[in-house]
Length: 306
Image (cartoon, rainbow, N blue to C red; front, side):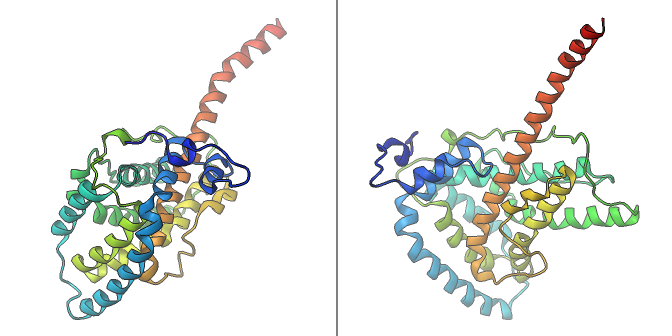
């Protein structure tokens, strides 16, 4: 497995600058260094360059055809078969970076919801998803992930309404749940056939998801992407930092988009989640640094007074 992406291995040439190197060096948006390397390594792969342009129109054509089929059997579902197929595909065909990012997403999404719940003025139940290996996907992981998001929004807002409360900035937020997932890129399958990039994988995955789940499950999964801004607003409100909503890409929550762009929007959803987690991790470090500096400041004051 390559430990150094091609855009970092090549010499910098001002007459022919590498766009991937420019994006890697840019620090205008929060994202963990290891994640950025993996993300751009996957994005700059030959699979994304040559496979994705053919996969995307093919997958979107299937979505239209499968939607017609679902008109006649909207309640037919094979969730367990779907997730076993997804786990098999991930283990045998998807690049290590893509698999690592996919598994990370479940951890990061769970941490974001738990952060909101812990800092909410009302108690809210959560159902964290923390897969340790690709086989964990077989337990309806993608479906439960979508259910968790909608159930969390419903439970949170029902509790806020019942207690006549609303989310507000928290002076000292609880960041205890914001940690790096115990997943290693080196542990991901990396055989010769693991060549498929993240975006191509998601584009292929979307019509399969549609075919093997009920019409309701697919529409719910697609519309869950509209909640990126909703979750972003919740976190920004608690942090008193609504300017960070610029990182949210799947807006507006009250205007659902066509399922045809679900694959592309799912990639944006993953990137937004990574940036949200990086922002919270950064704020956690600042809070810890401030707490460590406080005793020294008090000692200086006491010494000066004496």
